[in-house]
Every structure is written in C-alpha cells, then in structure tokens.
Length: 325
Image (cartoon, rainbow, N blue to C red; front, side):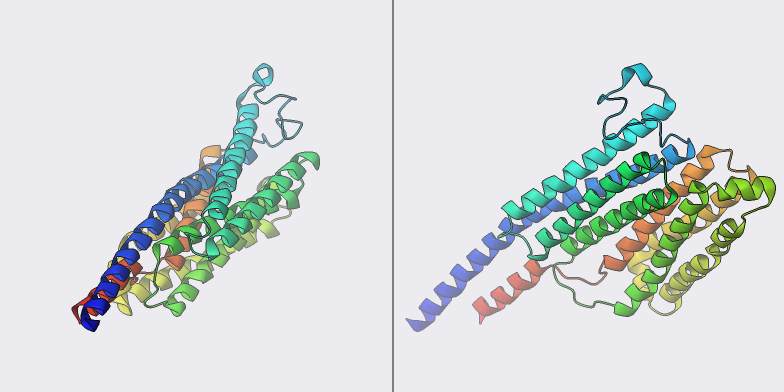
C-alpha cells in the first residue's frame, strides 16, 4: 500500500513537472521570437543611423519628435529627410517593441525567470536614455558627445538584447567557461572603444580635416592603430579554439568563420573609406554595418553556452529514475 502511494505521488509529480515545463516554455518561446526581431531591428537602426550621419541628414528634420511639425512630412520629403524620418520611425518601433516585452514580462512574471522583468526594465531605461540623446542631437545641433552617446547606447541595447536571448536558451549551465568569456570580452570592449573613436572622428570632422589639410590627425591615427589589438585578440581566440579547446571549434566554427570574415572586411572597408577620402557613403555605411555584426557575433559567443543541457530533459530524466526506482 505504501509502495503504491509513493508511486502515485511520483507519477502525479511527473505529470505536474511536464505541464509546468511546457507551460513555461510557451511564454519563453514568445520572448525568444520577440528578442530575435529586436536584434534585427536594432542592427537596422544602427545602420540607418550611420547612413543618416554619413549623408549629413541628422538635422534634415529641424524639430523633434515630429518632422516639420507632422508625422509624415510629404511636402519636405527628399533623401535626407527620408533618412532622418525613417531613423526616428525605426527607433520608435524598437521602443514600442521593448515596452511590449517589458509589459508581457510583468503580466507573466510568475511563469518566467525572475531575472527577465528586471532585465527588460533595464532595456526600457536604455531606450528612454537613447530617445533623450536623440532629441539632444537635434536640439544641440549634432553635438559630438550627444551623437557618440547615442551610438554607444544603441550598442548597449544590442548587447543586452542578445544576452537576454542567449540566457533564455541556456536553461542550465553545465560548464560556464569563464576564461573563454573573458577572452571574448576583450575584443568586444576594444570594438566598443573603436566605435567611440570612429563616431568622434566623423562627428568632429577630424577625418576630413586630416585628409584634406593634414591637421588634427590624432583621432584618425588612433582609430587606425586600434585595429591592430582587435585583430590580434580575434586571431588569438581562433587559435585558442583550434589548438587548445577543439570542442569549442567544433561547436562554434560557423561563428568564428563569420568573425574572421568580418574582421578582414572591416579593415578593407576602413582602408577603402580613407582611400576615397570618405566620399563614398557605401564604404562608410558598410563599415558601420560590419561593426554592428561584429559586436553581435562577439556578444552571442560570450553568452552562448556550448555545453548546456536543457532543464526539461534533465528534470524529466531525474523523475523517470525516481519512478523506476
């Protein structure tokens, strides 16, 4: 009788576990899909912002948040106005998407991990800061520090969103590989610093002054020299995966191949931009796109766990062992 009672309790617990895991996975799947859309929208936002800066369209709309006092300024529409207007529209949609995810995390807080609503509140705060800096770039007539902060906050939004996505994938961490994450963090930090220098370079017109008059070349030279430690750190990561931890290479070879390609294409685009005296927007915009993808891949590798085992399978196996015993 005692045996039958224990068996019945285990079976009931097993059924409850399945229902609970499936119930939670439904909500987490929604957040994963919304997170993937957010990553694509943020990369598009950064690239469009770069195109707006390259085409000198940052002040094409003289007011904020509307453009010439209307949501869609048909009477003033041209390429520059369209770029600035579309950049604001994309930023608005990204903000709405993040606000929507935050609201869902509050509504479903009992069915999702505790850290998720807190992290979405951080995302929402970054969106508010990003919008404020966007307004300041117009009000202060493209102040260099406001433009630089605007881009860096966009990168922080991208990094945070990707980290959320990867943490949702990693239900249980079997081996954290702290040393591997620290190794990847070095080029990520260097790339963010390089991007900061690059925005200062374009927003202060230092590159044009240096190339045209051979003056104020410190920022441009620093930007060029900074490519060497980034390249070295990436090559070190690839070499480590090949010669020290082959399991990482087997798991990450696609990401590492893309990273290697982005590194050299980024250098090539930078050289072409200088060779053409920054007169070819396609090279500069491509340079910005590459930087965004570079940061996205590095962030994914940092937070992606190659050896995780899904909590559902592990929990079910433990329950099956209990029932069998």
